[in-house]
Image (cartoon, rainbow, N blue to C red):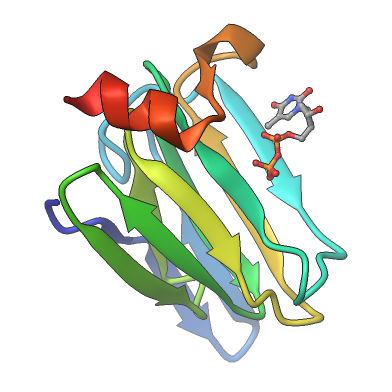
Length: 131
Ligand code: TYD
């Protein structure tokens, strides 16, 4: 797995922080959809799927959470706890999100519209797809 953590441009001063994300610059795809997750529960992990074609980029805008990324060959863990970086969730990567802090807000930028048929929700199907 390549480096999945990418920097997010942040301009911090005494007034606060302004951060920017641009298609083709910050993230290596065109952004077609934005969604966010909030009011998450620490003991209710999410994800547990891969996508056939979709590429995504997730930023923890506040709080923290732990990602498990699995490309079928290796598994890696990442803690997101700062909005000055994000994690690239490329197609055909099984991903899980765990250990959400109470204040966790997760912003996700996606390369396409929502399409249920792009999901691989069964781990055995995922293993077959990456073979
Ligand atoms: P899902 O992707 O399964 O969530 P998670 O991986 O975080 O557990 O999505 C949860 C529900 O939201 C599911 O019914 C599909 C719906 N949904 C949309 O309608 N549009 C979207 O852009 C997303 C991401 C989900």
